[in-house]
Image (cartoon, rainbow, N blue to C red; front, side):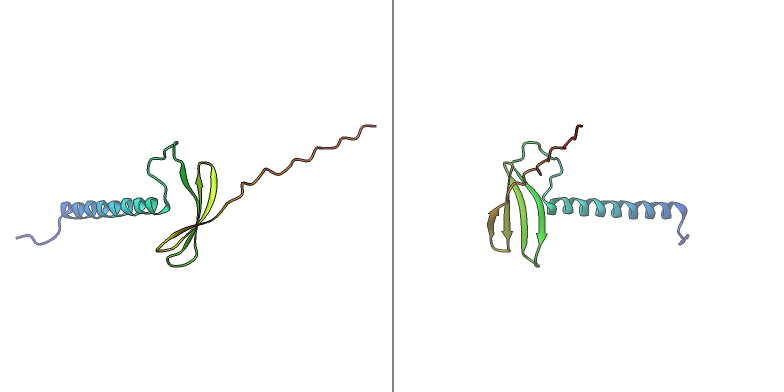
Length: 103
């Protein structure tokens, strides 16, 4: 009766351990993607997009979302969502003409 571990037993143990760790990492990655609001397959026709998220408490967040190209600031609690204000679109900084001196 052989009660010791053979090379095959160690190899099977290592493979099983690596498989479980790999599956755990894949599930954690998927949960993180779902939590951040990004989809696995990005669609070009999305009308709603989360631009930025700021957590201000255990169950409170401020979101900057984009709807049809317009940004909206939204406050989120455990029981409600409130549009705080439309976010102003930043105009590009004006470019000053370069003055040339001719003599």
